[in-house]
Amino acid sequence: MSDVVELSSELIRRHSVTPDDAGCQQVLATRLSAAGFTCESLRFGDTDNLWASHGSGEPVLVLLGHTDVVPPGPLAQWTSDPFIPTVRDGVLYGRGTADMKCSVAACTIALERFVDAHPHHPGTVALLVTSDEEGDAHDGVKRVAETFRQRGQRIDWCITGEPSSKEKLGDLLRVGRRGTVTGTLTVRGIQGHVAYPHKALNPIHKALPALAELTARVWDDGYETFPPTSLQISNMQSGTGASNVIPGDLKLIFNLRFNPTWTAEKLEQEIEDLLRRHELDYSIHWHRGGEPFYTPEGQLRATARQVLAEFAGEPPEESTAGGTSDARFIAPLGAQCIEVGPVNASIHKVDENIAVAELEALPGLYQRLLERLMLPG
Image (cartoon, rainbow, N blue to C red):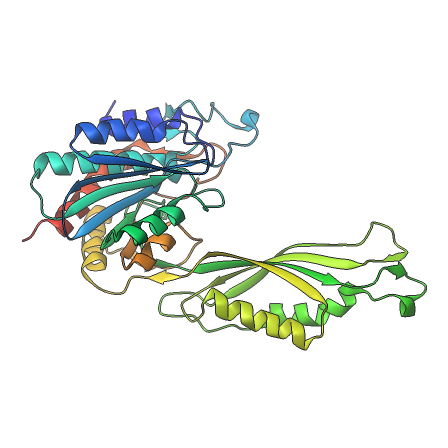
């Protein structure tokens, strides 16, 4: 068994469902400490974060990942136990194989190999992992970034090992992500009998014109490689269940995924202006999941493009699509951020998996990125 399959398997065996790290980071810290890294545990609330660094000065290159996984769901639907790593026909199965324990293992081994081959390398290389990426992300990289900001910790380049490839390793380079903001809206009316609507105020009827305007609006035409901003209503609830009662309130949740044309603050203001214009009696709670980030052409992007083309056999697609990642907390520190990782076809699914051949290629991919970026000439 190769070292990366062995380390990946050790991590997969640990039931690290968000935010429980289940000892994964201690495994990583033990290995990296033995390789000469300085390891610091940063625990906030019930979330574990590991910062392991080697070298000093600039540039500072960080490999970013997470040890937590989503719940496996009904175990009976899995072909094999999700927390017992199993290889079948050249494929490794288990919760977290693709998202993203195997990438974390590959990053760790790449860093070990890099410092072994170049013990006096210029600058600083580091691994940052959290156990709160799949959850609310309050006490994970977000809190670490706040700590780094207070300390003055610089980060020049950040490579996130999230599963980004589509069909084969290296066919996609993610160069940015959209921002995300969620609104929890309550529209108040007056409950009453449906036969006496003049004695009540139906909040559904009152809100419909505003909601129609919100959902029909074209927010922008996109930005660079970003798709247009979109709003989706994900939950809506009203009424008592009785057919003869006008409800007293309407509650709904909606989310916007937005490109750098907007900030969360600007979107919130636009939407509240619209709600007031429609004369709604409302309250709203906003949750800002993160602002968009974008890495323009430069050394990081150009180097990654070249390295991925060598692995995939052709230049990668450069994309800002998809959801979001913890890189959204690192980018505001002034870092250029990209995402490079395995195929994402099975993430969060039953029988999540990664091809063993792809896994065994990952450490070499990350090591080559480290060497091309950190070593002069």
